[in-house]
Image (cartoon, rainbow, N blue to C red):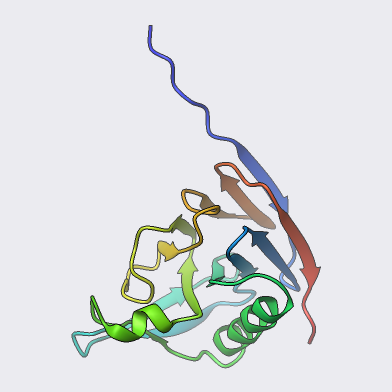
Length: 163
């Protein structure tokens, strides 16, 4: 007989006008629904452009490497740039010196894995995002009217978005 650990699962219902913050000691992740069918462009180090097609229930996640009011304002600003202005996502080449200077990174799609062991800003794949150690290992899935989070989540809050 072998013993397997059971990962916690939590559903959090949220509307398209709400922002979910997952809060760690050294970083925060903000999550919203795309709220509409949209396209985002991703510029890669190979001088290619990838088109990401999002549906209204898909997720837009912004990971900040800080906590508190300043980080949350930055997350809200980045979400506005992506969701309202369809600002392109830029991916840096591996080992780019600017990677260590990034204050936030983004990921969009139907599922997102949080990982503290990747280099920020260098992954064109939109199913993984660099996050603080306390949030690392969480898996977030878009569900109808909310999100499902798999893994140990300690602290979160849900806010209305300002329009």
